[in-house]
Image (cartoon, rainbow, N blue to C red):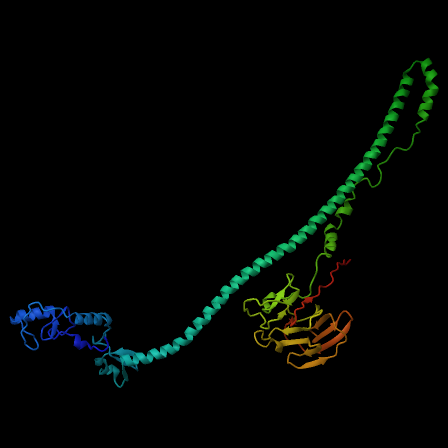
Length: 463
């Protein structure tokens, strides 16, 4: 309704400004109440300033509809105080100079400063520039959405990191708890052995000392009796002499007792190479895996064992889409890559009916076609195939059903071999000049788990 009512229709014909408290005469003409009172006072007659018709009412009624229209118009109309004016001519800026890219007034258009310049009405220029700015703003909005998504991923990464840290801390504590328990049991066993030896040797010493005490008592009695005979009178001494001699001779003067060998604690047995012996014994309770599976690369349908050496299919998990993760739902990479030297690891495939064992190039596109970076062998539908990173494949003739696949990588010589370690049977060898880091790779399409076989642990001493 405001748009269909021009400003001039809302202006009083006396003051030529927007109506203020408009009143309406019987002739239907309206005026500001103050303007009408001033007009009547000046003319000294109550006639309409327009049609001159006399009004019978000294206080004409308020034109409420017109008043509401005027108030609404003033609310929507920009304040004249806030409307910018030309700084040179104090005129309204109704034009836009295309050459100077700035608003101008009508006087500016005709000034020497804007000779031969092109102008557009302000509303038309503003519309065009708004459209251009809107186009420029579009990529910024897209960038803003991208940044917001990245921020959300960072939030998710933060929560995932906290969960990872808590779970890892729990497993570390469990591992050390087992080690502490082993050390405590070993400590208890060795202290028990020491105490047992101590008790045995103390008991032996007690027995030996009891024998010596009896000997000391017998000798003491003989010595005392003989000394009494020696102090007796001559006749008495001579009377008992034969008996005294026999008493002394009954106790032969044997070699004096010696401290027996082995009476002391065998300290060397208990302390010698103590930490080494414990370490040697500890190898029976620890295992070493040549490949550790990386949980940050696992597919969303895989479940890993706590020691990160076994994988199996499970229910889908909501995992963070970090750069390292492979998009294949049932794949995983080893945590360590190789770019030199020789390396070997065994994968227990068992009864799994669909698996891939491979090495993956570091530059492989993990989010799309990771297979373009794999050097692998595959078992699927009871058939074995070998694939190069280019996708070229070779059908393999494999005897029996290997339960374990050994991967042997000689990076420097560019040799990748697959074999059955149980029967020491060669399966396939790929020759290629490798130029980047290679990561162990495993895939499963079956419910049966795949596991990295632990290596044998031994303790050797170099002299």
